[in-house]
Image 1 (cartoon, rainbow, N blue to C red):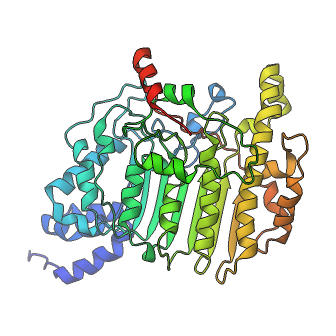
Image 2 (cartoon, one colour):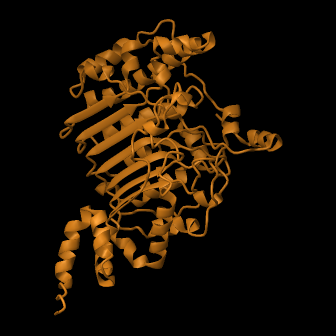
Length: 451
């Protein structure tokens, strides 16, 4: 029987290009022969998704033990991920080390930084191995990635390598999405490397500054709780948040950086020429009365400033506030709470969320009302129900009237957005849960200076 003639390489390349959107089929085709694998591998690597943070809600992890946090999201913690994720990530890293010439073929890259594998039954973590310590080397080679979706959900506060990323990462990015808690060093490396004039889409979903000690090391949770600055501003509508003086001192490593919403990429990007940006997405975790509110206020300011600086090109804006499940408790929830909890929710937390949400709207809508947006056609606002149903904790406060006036005057929204439910059980990141001896903790406290 005569042998079947081989297909020309140029024909195979056309076939594999058509299969680029079907990775399972493409992988099976590559297993037919060594020559087919060689030709198909670049197309298989065009879209690399080794992430776990985009699986949405995970009902299989929900139950009565999670009350009142009844909803579990895959982008909340490294605990909720497929057990195969870390082995697959390590296999990709090894391939890039063995075949570095393949790195240029990766155009779309989705990755969840978790670093360790976890046993789902006893929560035991494996140790980072040799290939893990080459992650930044591999990331540094991915110079052709245009679509980056990077999440950081790890709870490892003791491994120095995690914060030793290179200064240049993903320089070709045009569509950027950052999720979870990250160090300023990692975010700065990504944002400083890309060409802002070519950036088309910027999405910051629950992006939080993980905080740092003056020496650059990650800040432990115990120290955050012991020394946090959770002051309630005298005038939340005009407060400057993180002052320029405090920002400069943080940049020089003179004072600590506390965890909270990360406004750094917004500030870095708006200071550069953005001539192609068409979409901005900012999603915030529920407000926390355990956090430094200056980070929240600065995020409001930087979001509004970003929108103003991009008014000539923006086509769509999406702003989402997380609503803690206990922000709108049911009667059943209230019956199950002690009197102190009910008082804290009604007397402290709800008024705080009202003022913060109203303040955010005031700053954002002022820009939308004042500036000329030639291409903006869609503004989605979600999670602002408290503005309709709540009230300020201040004895006399007529600022709400002005917020509603901004809403009514805005050409891009109507009042309906204040009715949209956005129950969210993500908790604000408050430092790494690592054991610090009391004596060492006291020494750290003396080194943490706040203005």
